[in-house]
Image (cartoon, rainbow, N blue to C red):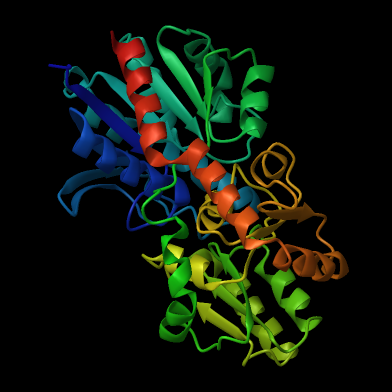
Length: 394
């Protein structure tokens, strides 16, 4: 019988504080536990909450370790001061948590950047236990917390006890610039059952059920947390230049610290008198694949990304993507004329490219869906994780 792996999953954010990487970590380990002999605990940091708290999420215990002050309420130099004030408290609580539990785990797998992530990474390495670090966002270095990069670097130059997981070629290149050789580059996992062509025949049924728009409308979709980096305001400006038949659906979490940006999006909609042509769902939705299936084009105007899982998921559903050009990401995962297009962030150019995107034949979109899933389906990714666990631990 294969051995059982005991893993500490550490994320810079976790439910109920939304983050894409935290959500992906949770879904990944739920799958792994169901399919393999895996046990795991979760430690989370936080920008929104303070102190140490143990709580339940479904059947899972979460250990939240954060400082005494909420970081999200500050900006500029004050934010940096608060982050440093929180340092000793996070390190202390992290040490209290791990000192008696370290023997319970075979390895640590981290997502995101925080004092807790950094300390527990160092502690596992000190105890000669393997470390997996997942690079989830655009970053100038894989050695974070950046203030202690010189202590982090030796950990990831030990190929027998560490692995960097890069979710895009862009992040892989960045890691290797710092002499890290043990890198697994792979896309984020896509659930091939939920994100597939199976919903395509229900396109207009879903449209009637979930939206205020009709069969004759051309529906444009974006699913992303409301934030200036996600660039929803660009889409409002774009829509204002298109014919009335074009409609836009915006779906995404609105964090308290980004409420101002969300209100700017609302103001833009009113400014251009687009209330009847825009539908906003300012929350997390459990069925994004249904919205991708009912849409005609998925829009991805983000200014910066580690990857952008939705560009894979939409193509898997057979819905083409129009994206900002992000070297090391879109040139890998969007084949122009097959899965959509990528181009510069210019409204006039995007208006032209929408027409080209809509003209991609269905059979090509279907073939492209098969290609995307052949590279990113979650079963393939999960097998890769298990190979890494075996090599690092054994």
